Length: 225
Image (cartoon, rainbow, N blue to C red; front, side, top):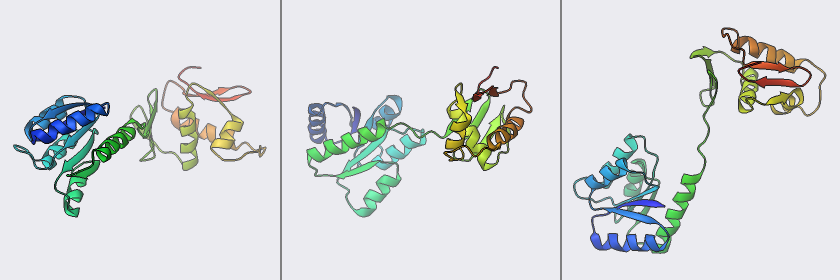
């Protein structure tokens, strides 16, 4: 991992940098809060290890300023301030973990590794987009060309499935199983009816139809026939 250590005690900093290097990490060192903030926001890091009590700019203010830039870089506070309130303030300021000095180096390495694994997890998908069609999975809203489209819950699920399989052909059976959770053919026109209603809402005001019928097979979300 590429790590920035912000620590004003030079002996402690040398010890940490050496130990992290032996653990396979590349670590840069900033000696005060101002330098730490400048480097944290100007360079790419996998992890920031920050002391709470720093000259020029304290660790809490440093981390708060980093978070205000929108940065999601992992932050570990490494400090002598070990009270419950200290930990709470540190985590509320934007830190991901908190380790109190004195510490066992094996624990520091374990926490660094855990933060590294967390950082490598894929981001949770919150939006889907195809052409000028957009879906917000959190607010459960849909728009096309910036204009909102009002969908019923089942229509939303149907469109979500089509968007997740854009440019692919999805069969009637696939829709029944994944949108209606029906694992047999009920011999009704429920799929056709809902697709027709969805198409009228999605394609009604656009010159380009996105929901295409693949005759004899199913449907496909694509920008051309």
